[in-house]
Image (cartoon, rainbow, N blue to C red; front, side, top):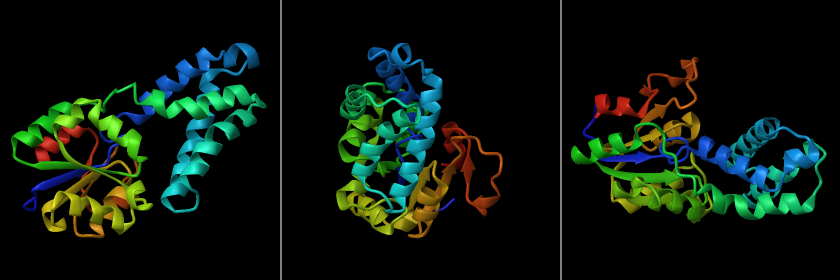
Amino acid sequence: MRNIKHIFFDLDNTLWDTDRNSMLTLKQMYEDVKVEEIYNVNFQEFYDSYYQRNEHLWALFRQDKVTKNDILSQRFKNTFEEFDIRDEVIRSYFDAHFLEKVVKHNTLIDNTVEVLSYLKSKGYIMHIVSNGFIKPTERKVYDTPIKDYITTITSGEEINKRKPAREVFELGLDKANANPEESSFIGDDFEADVLGSDNLGMLGIYFNYKKDSDLSKMNGFPVINNLIELKQLF
């Protein structure tokens, strides 16, 4: 292992359990406006469709093929329309309140606090670099124990760029006053986090959050399936 001083983390589905927090939020909102009761559409069906659509939009966002406003305006509208639900009141409720409600669910990825505490005790300086929108990203840090371990927070939205764009990593490194050669980046998106950080000379580590069995694309990069494994690397 290189002489690492700074450890950068992605946030969503690396430290903050985005999938679980989103599902819990949407389930409660779904029940609040009685979607299943009125339209006879099972929540799980709705959520599965939403999840795939949202993942696709975020993938396009990383490629600069859609904008933030496209994500916000399309993900619920198109999901509801798939089930022939064209109720503007319901859709507007989801559009207007999802982001404010989701940050009130603050489940973290397993072993987040234990690992951050361990790394801090070892003298590592830790940071967040995320593609998430600025305000929700800050809430996810400051409203959870993550705040006790993180020195800087960087969102690609600050410069209207997304990982794997090198400018996002450069901004994070600049805020941290860190050199890439003494920095590691840990994230759950191989292209955006691992290849993107490696392109600048950082040590990229892939967090196999979804437990993919095919890791042939890793090409020698370190892979962890649980954050607790970082204690073996650092």
